[in-house]
Length: 431
Ligand code: S3P
Image 1 (cartoon, helix red, strand yellow):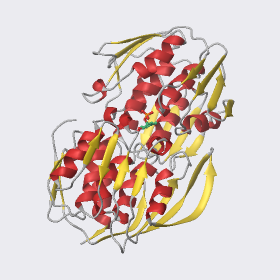
Image 2 (cartoon, protein in one colour; image 1 turned 180 degrees about the vertical axis):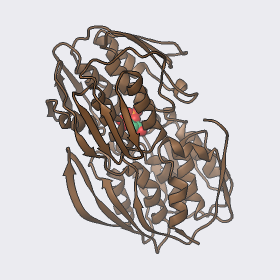
Image 3 (cartoon, protein in one colour; image 1 turned 45 degrees about the horizontal axis):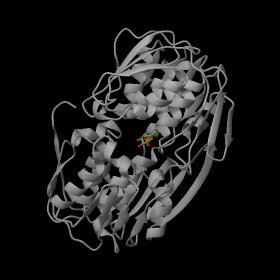
Image 4 (cartoon, helix red, strand yellow; image 1 turned 60 degrees about the vertical axis):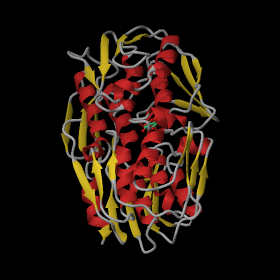
């Protein structure tokens, strides 16, 4: 991140209107990477405007794929499985997805590469991908302390394997399946807790045969990928902030156009419904295995919720926003089994607890989560984003119902996933 910027959020009465969301970040990463190893030119519409996805595109360019971009329209010329040795270190910026998933692809190429990132990414754990890649025969070294980036990867011939994931991570699953495309024989990933399945869907979209059984996905090495033309569904993790904002004002009415409704990503919609939000689904369709639709959200006061186990994994990116609005719910929100939140772009458990307290809330912090009692009144405060986009957006939402103004210090972080966030929020709030 460059300079620290501050945005001031003033209390609001309501939130209304339509939102056109940037393309889903998770799907944009996967389509861009698979396009890079496919045959032919992939044409994508509504590609994510996130800085994270721009990092993926520039890495693919550095690996020899021509990329042409005009706003949300992106064309990528595929390298037909043979990427080119990068002339410089691959900069993944703030993006854990870029580093972890791309590692699987470059591990089997005929060259060495180095992947690095910003201060936040260089603090994130990489053992989770190094272990399975090494088991497949990869040569991979972490140059940072304690298996932290930069990663130095020397391309090797890989062998397929069956990998039982010790943690719930779609990035790890994707890394291993991507490596499996280049490995000898079959590669299977087993998960005990279901994670987002965009990689499995995207592989099929590009013509790869993926065998899917309960808790398992298998690919055979050596398969050819064919380019696609696709529209990237709106990012449901970005929609979350407006959904939560709508949830805390009785008269809110928000419509999300063409938003991703993949069941492995849409758990928030179930949770919000159980909490008392009224959701109407219009025009639901399927594109390349991904459900997409229009959703109208109307609030009428939120009850509380307990989020634990598999639900925590399904909601992992949505938890900061949910926790930030928890004081405004009737019974409050308890989140458990969420240790992974401590190794995201920031320690999101600590960041949420700290900022809620700055706003005057009572919070109980656990090693694996938080309990935030309901029925609390918050006041404006200075919010520390810790350079984390989701913390910046979550507390911009909490600020809408606080008394007095709130300063989001480090507001520029929103560009990591949603550069248009503040503009869109400003257009939708009624004061
Ligand atoms: C992502 C998976 C999740 C999520 C991240 C995006 C993905 O990370 O938090 O924002 O696109 O696969 P983990 O795989 O570390 O759980």
